[in-house]
Length: 470
Ligand SMILES: *Cc1c(COP(=O)(O)O)cnc(C)c1O
Image 1 (cartoon, rainbow, N blue to C red):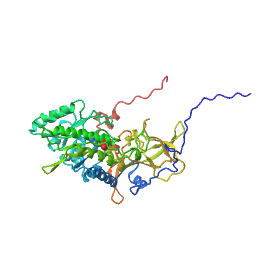
Image 2 (tube, rainbow, N blue to C red):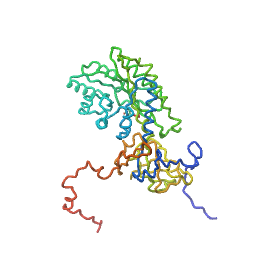
Image 3 (cartoon, helix red, strand yellow):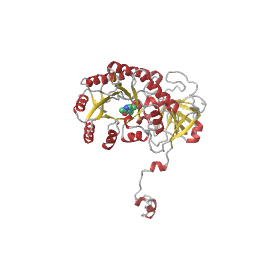
Image 4 (tube, helix red, strand yellow):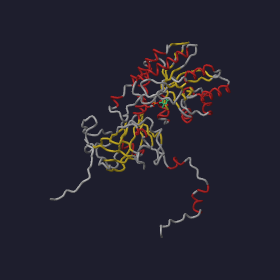
């Protein structure tokens, strides 16, 4: 009798390669060979890979649809474009042309908005760090200052006293909505009493004037009821404040509207899990109409409704083209591809499952594939699992939506940052940010004289490595 050789037990996961997570068989991968009528291949030939591609027509359609959703329901609406979401100069300029004000959260963003020609009185200045010099400039230029904490309030009061004037301020508040994760680190907390104390302090100051209330409850808020609750709370406070004759010029409901991106861990596709923008506008405007005693006073409509959407405006107006540079198989036998763009260019891959399309027609059956970025870092994975046909070196992939929080958060880590182009008019393409090179990345470095290349040659020779025991 022959003895069977022992084999170590193995557990293998069952894979159903061509079924998507709803159990449906997808016959072919979605292919996308062009963006706004311009072929992906042409774009890469002219501007290189990876490449961010921005659609001007989509961006304009988005901002018009979103502002229309609000202004058809409430008579005085102002949109503040959130610079940190995507502060490319061309992107901001398109939105300012469409009538959006600037919403900035730092000295850099304030200076950028001014450099792009936005007048100070159309800048909403948020953020927890406003150093004195930029605060002085913003006050002198009539910016809408949104106060984050008591020390900042004291600083503004001191500046106002020096200027011998009453500076209008808006208080950022935070509170529970019951339908969203509470964000308590920004602004004055309502439940603790800090918000009412700040209101009292502003009202009691000879150098300050209460101009508005602000709250930004979070980001990618999936329940419109959170906004209805936030708007009602702000309106209730506004009525309380106005009881003594004080008049607020606006109430700012912040940003946080979701885009059609696929959040990790949410089972339903975004078309099913994300409410329509109209539902948000309806919830907010209804609460404003019920809660503010909106009226015309001395020919002026008040209070204005300010909102600061970033993500919902830009996300689907930008795509990232990336190329396959190599292929691998994972240890568990799945196909993997190495791409020329990773977390350095697509930071939001940490919390989204970005849709990925092949630019060329698919060949072969879909398989559960891993997409690695180019960084020499284990965490650099763009998709841990995505259904794709077999990939070849040189294949182009189109990843979208990527317009929110990617170009602004992209890193000069290991790789140069890619170019950004804008498609406009009749398939015209303009470069709106050149790809980086060695000169750009090292521009701010300084080499002390004793380390300059010439000095190095005359320095003591580096001792040769000695072989151990030799
Ligand atoms: C980031 C930010 C926004 C924009 O948020 P989105 O989620 O992109 O809409 C608006 N207001 C403030 C104060 C912010 O910090």
